[in-house]
Length: 210
Image 1 (cartoon, rainbow, N blue to C red):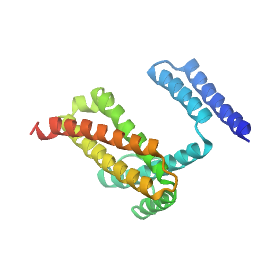
Image 2 (image 1 turned 180 degrees about the horizontal axis):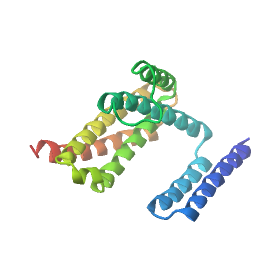
Image 3 (image 1 turned 30 degrees about the vertical axis):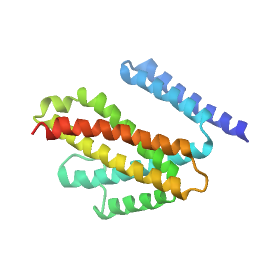
Image 4 (image 1 turned 60 degrees about the vertical axis):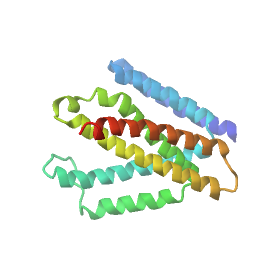
């Protein structure tokens, strides 16, 4: 059974490499290189991580992405009502609110350790934005005072996620029958490190800059 699962994962990984190979044959640039890196990481992740964790992370990540899409529909309908659209969502805000509620309802039934991994991945994504993307953003170069606003938003989001991570880690540690001390202490250390980084960043670019 394990060999069958591993073989199935390898087939998916070969498919990912095939797609990136086709892209490399037609396009050039850092995007292609990044696609190879992502495909390589996906191969390692799918080949050596237990199937339960892979499945649950895929589920919670997809559901959370749907929630973001629904929130995006609400925001764009309010902030950019005249923006050109290939498809216009009907019955707004009812449909997006139902989508958010349905996805979150399904997410609630996933294990707490899956929620911990989701928050960790989100914080890693904010790290990438903080240390790379924010320095190479074209919008920040053309908009006045946008850097301060970006640092404020990312600081609030990151500090909120840190609090959520600590709460979920505590719940998971005290509720679960099988104690996962590695995941517990990793979550706490990860949260403290990010609390320090983003608190300093928020104070430097938002509070002290006033």
